[in-house]
Length: 206
Image 1 (tube, rainbow, N blue to C red):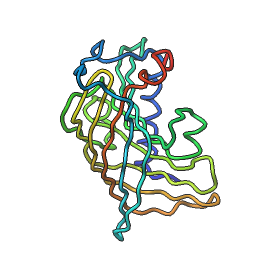
Image 2: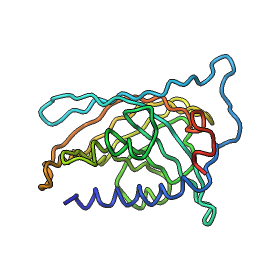
Image 3: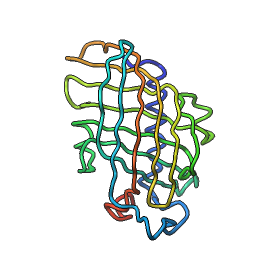
Image 4: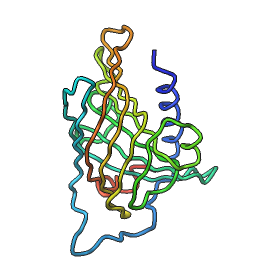
């Protein structure tokens, strides 16, 4: 079974993701990018996962972000997606690496933001909740529960968000339906993330 913290984190993520497909929009309207430095479609992330024994492992792929507002409550949501394939689809996410960093607020400006499993802080919009999945549709899967850390945003524009992250958490490794093995991990890395609309148009999230 998942730990209580992992269940809490997953529930918070799923609840907040309901906001995003309903009425997505760019925070701040049109692009505020420098016309001499356009946000090219460079949407990569690279993470290094290190366990308690010091053995490093690389997780690499593509990053996107999206914003949305629940039309019934007017609550804003923001999500960073991490996926190991440029084909941004639900089915592909279940087959490989897929991650979410979610904030119950609009697009963050530049600065440092905490990542936490504390429900009160998440509900107030002050922290991110984050989880990473690997091969969740297979008999051998890994779920990374992020317990704490920071996401440092170095560039924040209506169509571009770049930054780094430094995290700690627990990897739950599932095999053949048995109880998962657990190991403590740290995750360090960087991401370059355009808005989803830069690839798919705003209709993708509506």
